[in-house]
Length: 242
Image 1: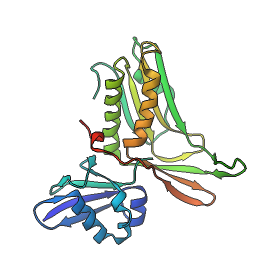
Image 2: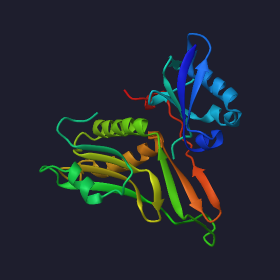
Image 3: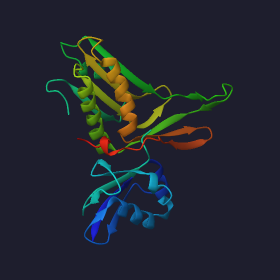
Image 4: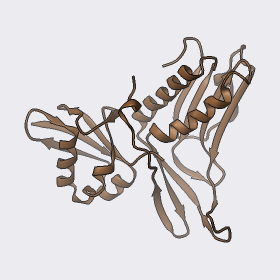
């Protein structure tokens, strides 16, 4: 018998009515696909969502043929809406407001002459193709699979350094909890000696990559109720940590 701990996030957590449960699998060997089947049997409300849910084993992406061992931690969640010695890095899941000056100081050194910063914010009004109609948001609730989120943030930093070796300090910060309209939700900061040494491109890559592989979700709360916002990117084997 194999005993595993299952963690559920965002919509899966809501449908199951719990974020954590214990699951026992028959036999001495199992793969992730066996966990999906067993979980669907234990939680029928999840059956229609599990085939497309992203999975992780012990805080890294996993796939249906990935082996599962006794005592493993297996997480299921919707698709998500290393470094050079001496250069500063900040990877943080923040429960408090993001402070721009603090992060800027943290990623700069006496050699820094340029810092490119991307910061997202809670949008209170979203207009679609019909400009006369808008969807209003009162606030957002952010949730993260925190241990894995930090690991994938460090992966994003490592990828930035590989692609832009002249970038110096890097910060990847994501807020969680309740965020009001106009409040910063995420921050990517990339520092370099000069502005033409990749800091613009690296910051853009950082936010795009965060939205692909860092397990963070948001729930929009508005006048008509609340709903989770899910992405459509499904990780591939290349998205695993090297």
